[in-house]
Length: 114
Image 1 (tube, rainbow, N blue to C red):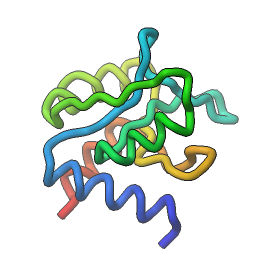
Image 2 (cartoon, rainbow, N blue to C red):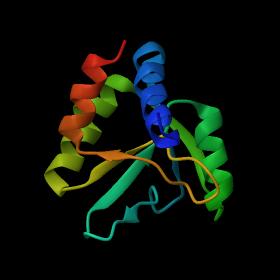
Image 3 (cartoon, rainbow, N blue to C red):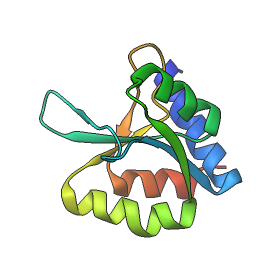
Image 4 (cartoon, rainbow, N blue to C red):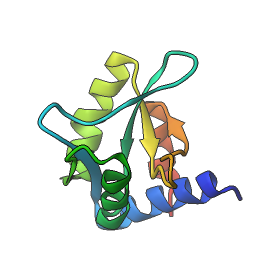
């Protein structure tokens, strides 16, 4: 399994267990990344230490915050789907890379995670 694949598997397993997701943000919101095809990705992490590493890599005074899985599923994912934004999952490494999924795919993978 690729590094991104193992990070994604860990994400779904971790958040099912902890019932929390983690993000990085500043006063203007959370950073996003624009892909080559024009799709915007909004990243989330499955643990505080993972999100803290991302905040350190990105810098710029980003802070780590958490939200419950229920709020994420009920509010964030529908908003992202409406806006055409995909969800970055446990991006890692010096360039913060990893997989992104549509909100619908996130919900399906979360339901299937064991």
